[in-house]
Image 1 (cartoon, rainbow, N blue to C red):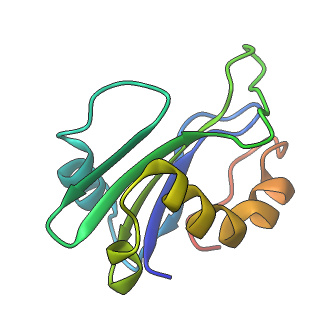
Image 2: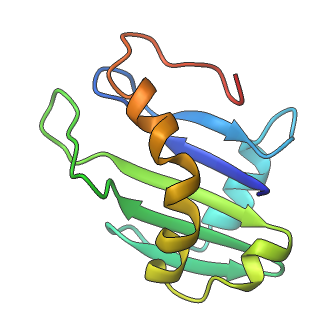
Length: 114
């Protein structure tokens, strides 16, 4: 699946855990999320890309007690099937759940697509 994934860990701040194949995913991320309002959840389409935000399904919290948010930019054919937060969560979360389980408590964040 083609996606950019930004999230926090228990002790580390926002990082890209998947870069979608971009050398620098930030411009793509900024482009798609620039029209997204603040809030716990979001699903916003920009052309053939979808900005998707939802809280951690297991309600894991960082050391400050904030529920971990997950933000994705989904593109390619997979983006066509996402029209709501729930559709996005059902499609994307199973693909990253095990990965996040392994890394969220690490003292240092892993690099994107490591």
